[in-house]
Length: 185
Image 1 (cartoon, helix red, strand yellow):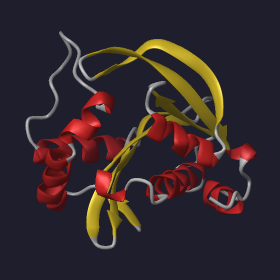
Image 2 (image 1 turned 30 degrees about the vertical axis):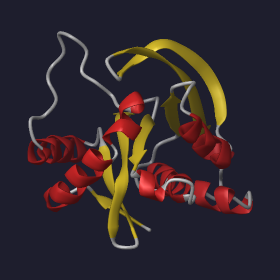
Image 3 (image 1 turned 60 degrees about the horizontal axis):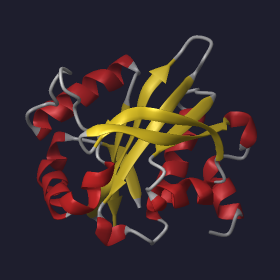
Image 4 (image 1 turned 90 degrees about the vertical axis):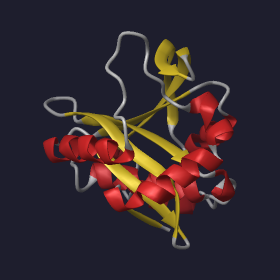
């Protein structure tokens, strides 16, 4: 498994994965609420926008590659500096790779990157209560639930409730990957 910056060269594989998994991902996909700025019109525009935000230090988009195949994406969003030093993580996975422990490992690596390279203190993940696959990811990572946010994010065409999970650097001093591996998952 490899995590690397999302790049324009991922366009075909990204589109193919999204197309094949459209029905599986739709209930969990962020959507643009009425009156908000539209999403980028192409993958190239998306990558340009994400790279600009990455240069500003507010977003870190990663392509997830498994056995040489594009398998999904993990993105660190909403990086807040100053006294907060936190961010949120979102992700999606090609169904072909589900149930193999890929996403918990990928998220653990990204959290370790946040705590070391990016110097963050806290990472949060917001999950719809019905999303059993994502709930399993945070369970495997041992992340604690810190709250419930009614109508938190616009997902699948409506404002949806989310459970909020978080971890701080103090909670996994050896790193999140080491914590995951130590849990025997």
